[in-house]
Image 1 (cartoon, rainbow, N blue to C red):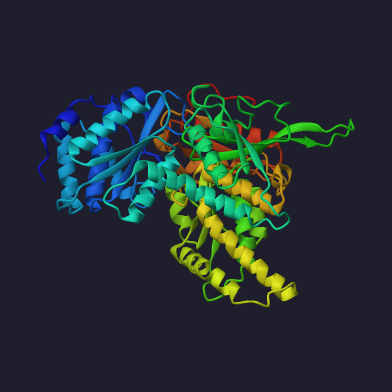
Image 2 (image 1 turned 45 degrees about the vertical axis):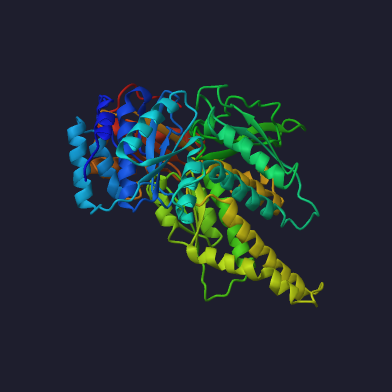
Length: 583
């Protein structure tokens, strides 16, 4: 393949990053002002990836998700709407860390030979960016790399990460040679809104859809735009159905500063912009900076022994409880639908080691299969695909529901025939048999709506919010009942800088340390000293730190276990800075 002078000029326009960068669990991330060459080079690689797949649409998203505003990043999205094929991650790292344009062209030539890339198809890349003040500047670097390669670029502008994934997936499913950007974004909103309204319409205790409201902590990010557009899309179908009140909107606060899903879930604190008095008894949620994760929370009354008045306290409803709500609802509807046994549709929940032990026990007590995967959506998503209805969530609120092709085909076939079959039954009445058939019909309506309201390409804060709100309405639940589904074991999550995080190697699901061997033995020792004690550590995929999770039967014991874990890490690897004596 002959590379053009435009490509060479593009590559030589940007100085290589001053440090080696790794393609972590969510692509490249670092301080924004060293990423110009990385963005340019990833634009080139995205074009090459498209070329290798016969001109399929490939995505490129510019965001640092839950990181602070001064950070930025880039990740590539494969044609199925999922993460970049792990086999291409070494290519990304080699090109990102190449010293000059000559080395990059050699890398590209090697990729062409290894992947047997040929033909004269046109490469196509869809790009999007979050609302960080430097994202547009970095997007221009990527666009120059794409056009320098000779590929077509479709710029969605400021969108959430899930919107980009959805656009890539849907554009390839349509098998169109090009895309209409406004239509693509409209399809996203209309698909989710119609699924939401359809699910709400199955509520049998009322004749009309009841209003739903929620306060959204948008983390100063692009999710504020998406939530407002989605609210309008819902209102066009069913006015007054959904009311969203956005706090921490774009420009009102630095992205993720004392707000957002990461802050709320990790620190277990109320975010900025939420008032402990004014916002009582309201359902709240927090997105992260690019709206690919969500946690819910609320300020709820608890009885007081000292006073007749209720005492209000803030409670967190994290990814574990979101997954539990989704899975229990889906299990109920799958059973009620009485699907013929020959289809044998499976339901399962994929969690990470961060899942609270109480959530796993609750799911298993309801007969729902659970399994563990390594942290990161690129690890959870494939495991969820092993089920016909696969729910996957990280405790931080990143997750979605996947419906297998077999399940989607079954729902589509049923929907096509449903009205015809009911019209053929003129004797439908109010007998037990008729009511039973109505419940089956309602269950199938709900499952079909579920398959539309969820963004099956990737975890999506807006989609997950709509799905949760609809389920609460259908089941007649509020935030208190949701919170009380089970009681979490107290836990503590921390991150500590270490001398060399690469010294720590974990097993496949990250529940145990493989190396150094003595480190895991020491962790086992401290865990045994606490009631229901469980802890694990892992090197972060996005930061130069080691992440710690500890849980026990009381908060004081969980905190003490976390501190003991830091001490063990220091003894075997070396911690930078002082070891805390209290939390």
